[in-house]
Length: 575
Ligand code: FES
Ligand code: MG
Image 1 (cartoon, protein in one colour):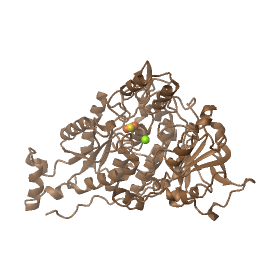
Image 2: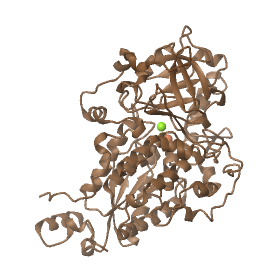
Image 3: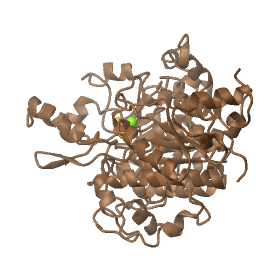
């Protein structure tokens, strides 16, 4: 084994090595510092304010036991955590900050490898971004989904069923007291959301990318097998250091190919697009938004989970889990992509059985064909926009309608339910000012509600277009991540109420057209002042740094100076 990186702190008899060792001893024996025991950090996103990750401190103990058992020195390292339901204006505003903290804490400390503990939506992306920019051996333990809770005999899906129950209260079929009582049934146990939202998606994709001990992703948070897997991961981390196998050895174009196939087959969150692009950007992998369409758009949806379907993550695990799904699409996977074990992902699929064909379908009889993300371009989205056809109304996938434009989420809330709003079921709702810079942070507001008078008339879906994101638990004919965003001077700032918008998903186009159907010269127009006015310019702090440096959604909304990697060079001495 080559010399451990931590030896650059601990080796030798000088004053500096004395200082580094002495403060770390606290019970550790001499040989903990002699260069034969890798020092493995456990990057822990546990926080009482990230309830989905609160159990990770117990998981960290199992990882630490595994590290010790394999002869390593485990070192728990708390890193910033992001609670999706708690943080305003949106947890996404801090994904890059968390990634930067993860990166710098790994690089600045005397460690040889790292185990990454995440769960709630932004935490696994941030951990993978940060660890990828350092390049030390790294492996993820996904914290896992919560158990299915039932209320009045019915299973509750996190997020998705909040909307259903709140509608029942409005309709008078559920009392407010019962509604409140359902809260603990919906969040039945430790763990993250149990629908196929962003947390479930990113946990499974971390494994599809090869960065998780094979078979572990999707294990429910309270399940003993999560702790068993955490222990095994601790052991594996020590092996990774010995083998000097870092993220760049696992994360290749081939593994992103597999992640994109997986994203479509599991019906995963649209948020995975910005997260995978940002991770790839850290590694210099040439992944583009168009790769999602090229690789994934014709992959069938095999998993019948909420929000698109019926079941929940606990059911997916019971039915055979990720490997059982991937076995169905094995021919679409890149066999060259490796996992952290050094073996290819496809090697783990042969023994994967399906125990419930209601939950995991065959490729011959999928939940839906062609389930992946489609990428649209046109005069309204020269940098691209995405849509999830499987979540849309088929008749609306080719649609031309009059735009009703809102300059901000506040403008939308103020006018949407106005009985005098000039809108009909064929209208196209356009919301701008919700991109990475415009909000700032790119919130999950793109699936804007339908105008009240149309809901009352029975309208359940309309074409909606926005430069923001959409919750992984949401649904509808929603065009998202329009690039460039309005606040960056994109054509979205130039569209006006009354313009004709033509959506053509089969043709992959999104255009503002004239009465003759020809695309309008949007560049010739001035941007609407209100569209730019919605761009808040923060005076200081993280938001200042963020708006000055955030990139557009088509490259993952990372900060420009965080793209790429700095490696794990050891800094100058501290004393
Ligand atoms: Fe944490 Fe949904 S709020 S995963
Ligand atoms: Mg979310």
